[in-house]
Length: 535
Image 1 (cartoon, rainbow, N blue to C red):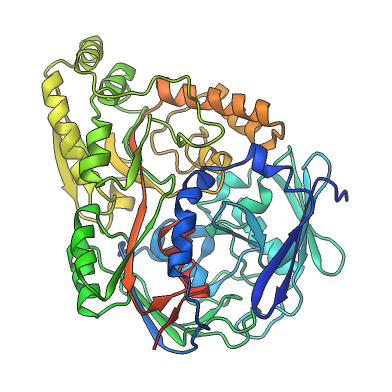
Image 2 (cartoon, rainbow, N blue to C red):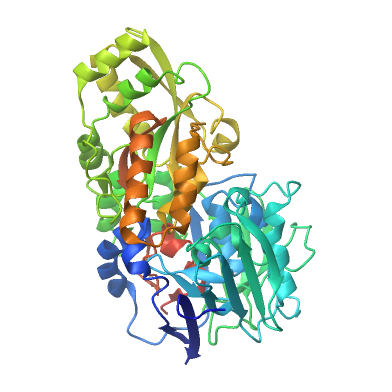
């Protein structure tokens, strides 16, 4: 196994992480300054504002309200699809790696990892002394089982599309695992740090409870109601976690969620709406926590069913979007204008040759006429479960009327939206949380066979480009590949994407240790590992 391509090692000092790298993950800073990194530079300054200078205090009970409430809540990492699952997962489990604020893979259950020369094999050395909540020692067989179960059709893993290129995972010596791939993939350490790849005990099939290695043990789990966890005193990170207990539940109504925080009924909340920021700032006990990131809201137009299977209708809608108004008025400036694809303007692989779309009513009318849909009427499904989609839908509705298209907004309840509406109705709102690299995002959403391909846009050439991007190390070739990917989605895809949306959360001023990680709300959903309560 070569060590001159990609190595990463880590040691623990006084309960904190001190990392040393070999050659920088295939010079990742040059060729995978990922989706996440574009938002992190903006967020980096904020992290120092929330980090406490005093020694973290142990003890206390944290009450957290998420913005999603669902009877589909699960303890099975392979089924994680919602923010409630992600946050709960980080309380109870760990992955081989973790994603830091720069979108980089850092050692977690693996203390080091390295690749061969052509990045078709990766070896992860496991951290010694890690035990599951029931006392069983972590071993290679647990890791092998946890990864390979995603390939089992019976599991119906939400992450199955990410392991299609994986050939096998085997033990490597007494304390390692070897991951073999069909083709080069420089993003494997990042992929194995994402939510779905948290490690469970070998043979686990019953997920009515959770036996993980995480900072907390499960005390109570009521899907759609609440989760209660208590400190794992045998956690492998010395001195952590700081809290005694966390109660986590959903409050779907954004007004009720903020009122609960102001009243002191909760300590932290996700998804503070932009129009409520000023109100939150007026409360002396509340702090606003904003993380710029490549999260985006889109209006998905499904390409396999009427009426949105008509390319001219899709192009008409894209030319109706008043993106500037959405960023300024709907997002209150907490976002960035998008251009109907998933790459942010500050990304090193952003396709700057594509004309920035804005409101062009004449062009919209032209495409409506070609589509034979002049003076037609279509239904757009929006919901509070997709942050800001109702307000964005109203902006789109007004511009569509000027072009001669009637858009009827159908406001759907949050509960059940992802099971009843998403990837089922021709025209519906979707929010996509960031992934650490553009390759992961493209694989999850735009591969023809991706489980989460919510527009059902399928293009063999696009599939080939996405596969090629994963193993492309040369920065110039990687950039050109992503330019081609963006062009296809921009010109033909079913995604009308007006803006990238900051994560905006809020918390009590007594909550300390929260740092921005642009993979999700509240520190990338990984607040349990680091936050503490000031007395």
